[in-house]
Image (cartoon, rainbow, N blue to C red; front, side):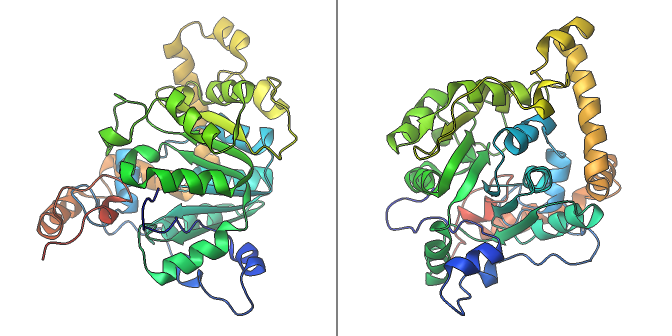
Length: 360
């Protein structure tokens, strides 16, 4: 994500892992860690970030909803079986939380705003489950010594699984070389990568940052990672039909060359025996002949799964869609403020405030 003199990203690490790597009494990453407490989910800020400035939980809930693919998350959890994982660009944190619970993993996710903390707090408070989940709210483009110190200490840890899903298209291309270095260098066993392809519609995409999946494969293979075609196909099928427009097309699975795992097309039982994704295709197509029918059933399964996993967050999503919370006046106020504080419009993502500098 970074290039030239800009330091590599300070990836998130759970504090127990980080302290094992840090010198005694080191506190380099403490200031970046989001604090999860017992407060209620805070949606009072309204929708922010659409014209620059700080992103808010409302922005994601109202623009994207939960946008969660349950069987893709099962692929990450049950097929790859990580014990440590890092998600770069975790949005609402649902996929990270799912992996933490279902794989019993120590998962860290990176988003640049502390506003994500209120969301993750609600995920874990409603249903603690297994594993651990933490966030570092860090401006990864910041060249300050505090960010660089955190970067140096967490990169050495590595993670069984590193994944980033539809994030790279929101990052200016000048940061691509360092983003690739960070992702490839942090993956001890697996890297799962998905990014918007050229011409793919979406919110906040940057044309120059959108590459074909073939080009992304070349880029990561040049870093020494090994492309896994069978597992890639499995991951894509797991994303169907909920994320048919992006993950089902764009996903790539790589392994570190030291990882002895073989490529396989045999799914774990927690993937292959369900017809709500593309893995049990024969049974699904026999019962629901059209894509539209399969999509309706899969969406219903997904919504039920979401409500069971994250009751507070799904309630907030429904209220946001009804206009009960996340009112538009928050967005209008932010548009005025943003127009006065940034050189160009920002993106509808948590990175909005990171790409443009204030007017002087």
